[in-house]
Image (cartoon, rainbow, N blue to C red; front, side, top):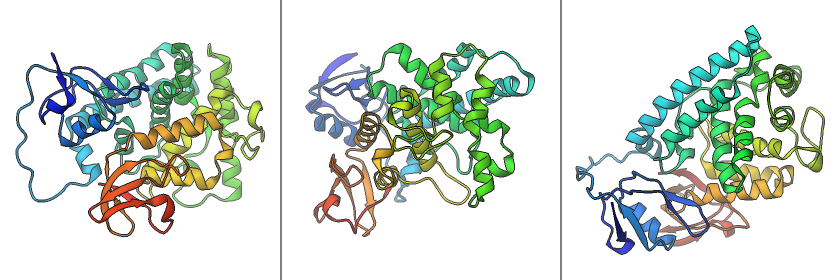
Length: 358
């Protein structure tokens, strides 16, 4: 490998190590083939030098006139193909392990479950944005097991953003992995219902945190994980369930899982809709009321999610396309967009929003 000044980078070079910003945010991952956009991103974050592999990738042939959508670009990438294969393998293994615990009373092997998530994280280390991978995993799949794997992976990234210790990160990942185990005791007719739940059906759904706790309470789990399973639907303003607990009554890891859980639910495809654009999801968090979530957790999560999309191209609801060039910390869902007609600060144009990533 060799060290190259950012100003001397050219498309086709391959990163030889992870590249971080001055505040320890992952910008580019090891093994990524550089292009004009990723080189610009390095300059944007004031990265002066990067280690690259000695041999560059073969030149990429000119693309056809048809322009792929953002999702199509991701789904056709070798990083995504590798990620999906590992994800599906480990999701099936996770499902079988949990079914053995729920249906046969088998002991819970925490290390084995943890390895399923770590395998995927190892695979995703070479991907530019784990969130993009998760958003594109499936078209209509509301399976409890897939969702739990997603939330565990999000909690892993979230832990890094919160600068948690290795032990705390492990607790966060296991909390995400097991948070919805109780749904295995809820009828499929309710779990997979495409329309709005009746009041009675929602009351049944609301039992799943307690059901999960009952399934896991005799396992050799850290009490903090059990608390997260039990309280991940509690909200800091007291509007959650099953207890209506508020702020200091809710465990820290439950607060983390609550955010990862809602974000994954919003940005995943459903029978009745496609996955929401990340900025639509962020807007829903803001409009729902950030006071429902722990201030440190929600602001850290949303600010970092938005930052992963800096310099991404987007389509606006007014038909214009452009590039995200600045994040407004007071309105995270409304960044400034550079278009061919100039800059549009979405925070002062409430009639315009990001429609999709392109």
